[in-house]
View (cartoon, one colour):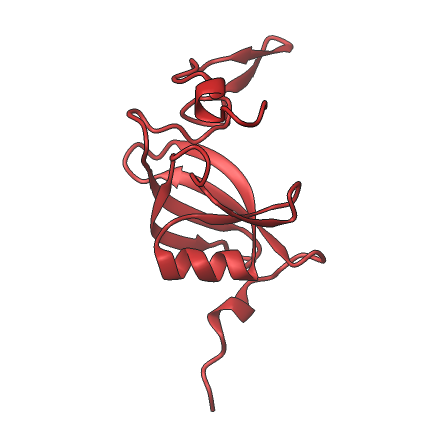
Length: 136
């Protein structure tokens, strides 16, 4: 009997994707949410760096390929339903780490408070200097 391919244990959605949460290993900050397809997960495990699937571009997205803000992956976990992944990462390329394309540490910088959204994290680096070729 052959071993079941570990990728087959993931419950991929109808589009062949699985949601992924990137969490900073040291601080435990939730940095971002993204998607992976089978190839992205396989590359992430192989390279030890986060590789996602960009739905808007329809292709693999090596985190940091444009910004230099790479995520080194220390651990990949799967939830109890096998349909969500959690990456323990070190965010590199800037100190403190920038995971968000807005130039912030985390993509989760808006907090609902008293009936409105409030920005709770500062921009650490101007996105125009991170992505000079493409306005965001």
